[in-house]
Image 1 (cartoon, helix red, strand yellow):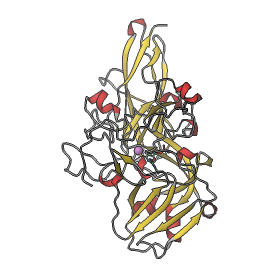
Image 2 (cartoon, protein in one colour):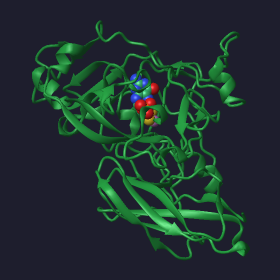
Image 3 (cartoon, rainbow, N blue to C red):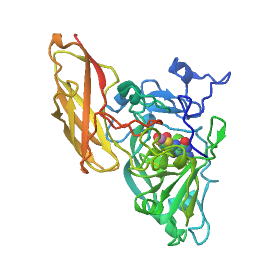
Image 4 (cartoon, rainbow, N blue to C red):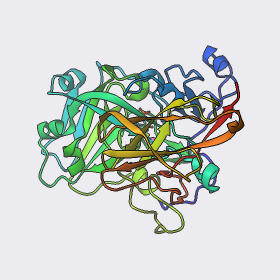
Length: 397
Ligand SMILES: Nc1nc2c(c(=O)[nH]1)N[C@H]1C(S)=C(S)[C@@H](COP(=O)(O)O)O[C@H]1N2
Ligand SMILES: [Mo]
């Protein structure tokens, strides 16, 4: 189907709570809309709700360690979380790139040799709302701030192992996992179940069929019983609730590579740029948006930076809207497909320093990429990687 210029502001289907659907959670969430179809609790101090999705508040990572605990990991659902019985679940591998179809049960998958890796999942639309608030540009889609991202410790079977068992043919070029969640219908168009191809080289390189997150079976919202984990790529590639995988000897596509998840707008071809693959480079402070910080004493500010392209090599922070930059101290693991933690001390000054201030962090990676001051505009608001102007207020206490 040809690309249509988006009309609404949100590309996800909206549903209002049906009568009798109000729960304690709804009461706790106050005026914010409750994302329909997310199973785990979404306390307001940990999440901001957007349509069918829930964004992590960055202050929830302060003191939380390297991994994002399951209770605060963001959820991006096109429809709603399906409840799947692992005992009845089977993974079907099929297509022209295999000698014969193969079906695997949950127990059979768990019996295969496993790997454990720290990998980030980040939505391609993370930071989207900043196109408007920082660059005064209209975009459509879920208005994430910076919390559409998380790192977890995933355990599962390399996709390469499963493809080998299935008797992959040398002609295989693309591999497409499909979710068991409901078909995605937007603006009256049924796009079918969430699915997206990845090239065979990536599939054989580092992709995992994960069944554990942070040492426990996957929570329902994050793909139970089995999800793909595609390191360094946009979150969409990490298909949750995998039901089948097509292995094809000819190139595959889906609406998620033709209509969504490409760059549209001025400067891009009429059908959009190439389907998005690798994530961008970004940084976030572990602070509330509009944090209040006391004047007259130093504050140890913490943050994290990440790049889909390579290891983070440095992070600079500015307290004066970019006039001067100070090197932050990196610490802990610098896992390439995850994130790097850092901290820096800031003394906002005495009582005369009170008022609105802006914090900025700018990351560099080993490929020489640096966060730009402005992100190239695209109509669907993908890959916002510019330096973020984090508003804080310095107060006299
Ligand atoms: N089956 C299925 N897989 C999916 C999605 C979905 O809606 N359905 N959303 C994708 C998108 S856009 C993202 S960003 C990640 C989010 O993973 P999380 O909800 O575990 O954080 O899952 C991806 N996998
Ligand atoms: Mo996403």
